[in-house]
Length: 316
Image 1 (cartoon, rainbow, N blue to C red):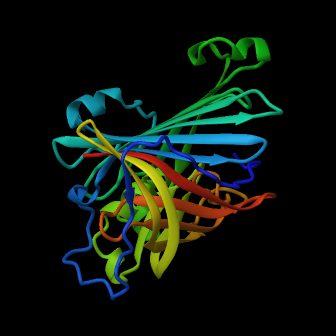
Image 2: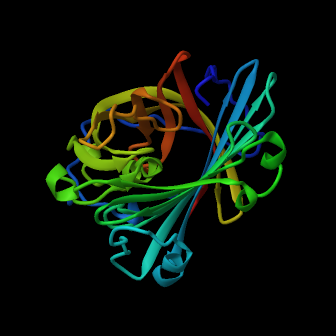
């Protein structure tokens, strides 16, 4: 993903076309509460696309609710630490299925699954699978004392053709951290920032929000901060209960910037923070009326600025 040049021109199938009405420019009203509220999240599926002459990237996200006892049974057992558990009867799972199709390389498929508590976005477990280039399978379990990881990789191109449970390189690692000492109520996960931006009540009224987010090997403090309204063009298909419409036009959106800081860890060098392949100047653009994330923008190493624009959304 780091090698993509995000020159976006998104074209959706013509269904019912609805011009997106501009949002009035008055200051947003005060909102009660600053916690995460699942009722504020209007979407259950999102599809983004980036495309240029050489590369097409498609990212599909799915949000679903699971009984907590079932989710707990699906999570990896940890060799160390006291595993986090959901605070209520329901656990959410956010999935990302990404495909990178390049003219000069074999297609790459990336699968991410994150189980988390809907109330505070505390991560419980994570699954990552990459196939097509630099293949790996990484499974994580979040605990009170740190994050346990089991990593598998193929030792050859021939072995890479088999299923991950047949890959012969395997290693277990524990990334220790002290949440209380770091000032972190919980440890969240990078992919969940898309959920947090939609579910946080205070962002639209200008209240910054800081969360502790585990990257690949350490925690980062991520501050979400509103930067006012901007105008963006949208062109996406909206589905609700088997009824589809296409939204097109230019609207005023709320820009939520991500400011990141690596926290203390046992690593010799702090890792770079990344969110969907973006490393700097990351901004999530929200529809202030619906909390729908319409665009994600940022800087990509050795490439430059890029945009992921919403292509399709399935609403609750």
